[in-house]
Amino acid sequence: MASAIVLIPFYIKYLPTEVYGALAICLAFSAFVQIVVTYSFDSSLYIHYHELKHTPEKLAPYISSAFIFILALGTLAGIFFSITGQLIFAWLLPESDFSFYPYGLVSVGVGVFQSVFKVYGHLLQTREKPETFLWANVTSFSVVAITTIVGLQLFPGSLLGPLGGRLLANSGSAVWVLFRVFREYGFHFKSPWQNTSFSFNAYTYLYQLQQWVVNYADRFVILFALPVAAVSTVGIYELAIKCLAPVELLLNGLNASINPQIVKAISQQEPPKTSTPEINRYSYGLVSVIMLAVTVAILIMPWLVDWFITKTDYSRAIPYLPYIAAIFIFKAMRLYFILPYSVLKKMNNLTAINLFVSLLKIVLMLWFIRKWELYGVIMSSALAYFIEMILLWYYLKDHYIIRFNFFKLIAGPLALFCLILIVEPMLGNVYPALIHFVYVGLCVMLLWFLYRNELKFLDPLKILKLK
Image (tube, rainbow, N blue to C red):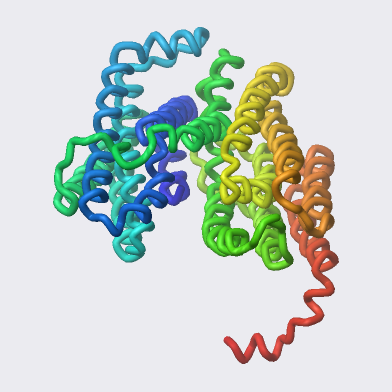
């Protein structure tokens, strides 16, 4: 995510929109390969590590075998896509001239190496080694950025630079991970499910695949449904999404910071489990921060994109920014309803809901895109998130007592979303700076109205003394 923010100016400078669109397709495919190869070990390590940490003779074979299994699955994925990759892409994208060779195959390697590094990152977090985790990620990010920038300068206008640089950087990270794992835990070629269950990861695995559909399938649908200049259109759409990476980074960071507190609060309750004012405050705070971040991003990002643009085609991304930004309001709201599913071990329900939403989103995209093009893709995403939130709420209420302030969690955020959706088409292109500044002001006023009672208890003098 951080590399996407840093590399945007270089992509704009060195890549035409059609090449950037092809890069977006390749990186989306890499993300798919990463999920397939990982088989949800990134999620299950936490549980199994704590179950086996007091029996080192079982823990070492499990961790070592897990990484060997990932490598074996990665090898099989490489062989499979080497044979079938072009046939699959030709079947999925019959009207596109996008070729799988050689860069689709390079993307497979990128995905495999990313999976090794990602699983090890979760292992470091599980073992509570924050310093190693931090420096590993900073180093990996730096190497990816440097190799990509050098590659773009050496091979401008080509996928060889960004994909080749990423493959080189990720392969180095994977070799470092495997060296550390096998040095510490040994080389044990046993089933990683000798002390656990093969099916344990299945629901989380399916959930991650469905999340890939929600987050990445739109690029492929654009290629399928808009054959004329489709790759260039994907490049425009990808730039608009990547410009809002700071908002997504903020959302993910806040969610990661409050999740342990919410999990702890729910886990300590006796049945029946219920939401509490403490749990709700975490979610209200997250949604409020994202609402403000969305309006600030709508104000600032068009100006930044216009400043960095050296190729006029990329300016086509600017009108889509407010609408894509507004979708983050739904992304923040839905997190309130998702977390209890995992704590209550209702992943089967969550998987079923996400399967329906994933299929619905694809159908809506195919329906809307032919009439409204990229606006149709954005509309389908917003509608899918809204329906998902309703379904999550409906199926959770039988297992979890839900009590929250409707105006703070639902009505207030929806009011801001509707404001952007109604005002932007009418005035956003005529007076963009003024209207986008008004969004920020109205958001601040709305948050003050929603939290005016809480603000009465804030003592500015005490806050200044703390500083």
